[in-house]
Image: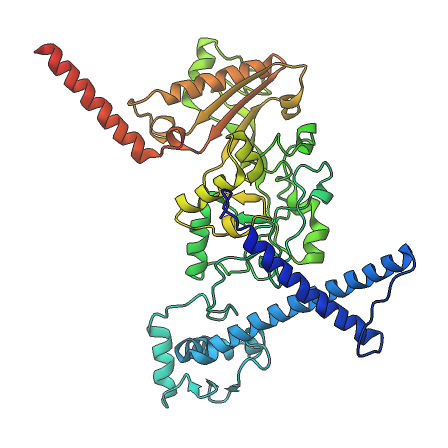
Length: 479
């Protein structure tokens, strides 16, 4: 195994075998299409003939790839049906659920169980539902109904969702059915660059070009909602009327793969930029940046106005209470792994292996999918607070006042006196407002990484150690 964590010689041998296999299939198909039982490739007399043969081989390979994709989807469907047939408890549970709603909607079974999934009979006169040899009734319909409504039912992810009990832990490049949407990070044309596709829902799983999940650390809560059947596996948000409240970019840096490596510069436009791709490819694409406008109220800013440090202008500082007009950008991380590795002066393979191992093997595709270069990590994002015209943030002809601030929940929110983070934050906001009022740009970037990404537990341990050291030194000086 080479240093970058990817098998070299073994992979080459495997790929050669696969390529040879598909070429044999392609030649066989071509022979059939030509109406002969064998295909003899004679010396070609011109480059045109060679090109025609290569085109035929390419078209045949594409056809084989499409056939394999359909076959893989069919196998998944069969696995799901077998899972129901081979698990009486799950089948009976699914049927009981249908039983509860079949009287209100006799066609419900058509939506839940596709024709031929397994034999199902519905007797509307008796309100009795059975599937194969498994019955939802024990002979007493009234008792069964009481049990259905009185006994809490535990639902599994497989129930009525069409998912199989077979869990796909990882995928591999060139695997049957795996066909990621193209991603050319840093391309100036967003339509040629492509959307960030990371969802694992049924229509999108095989088209993903990113590792991880949407929502950063909040992805875990989404998983809980799905597991408890509060949200369906294939739920797709409605982005109607959610367009950005301010226009940003594009800028030259967006066309340089090494300049922006930890967020998607087109993240605020994804559902709208790639609407045609979403429809034609039936994939799930979500924004990773949202932009809105709001008012900000901090108690200290009222004192800033009273003391004369801030002036009320009616545009940015709105009134004597120190209320501020602000444009806010919420940003979820999207890592371009080659660029992140370059920033830290390490090779991409070392970065991937460390991410895989330190997260307890949570993302095996960091190792198996070297072709996928994007990673949506399970970490907090950041929020940008812009005072004044957002367009001025990128104007090289104006001054900018910038405060980059790491989250400190104890001080920023609850006013704890054990640290002085909030006063620095308030100072940064004041200076940003002043610069914006003078025709420049004022920006505060708030990172969701407590204590330089140490976390509150480690911070509090440090506080305790610091207090103990201070007490020890004071005790020694008294002695």
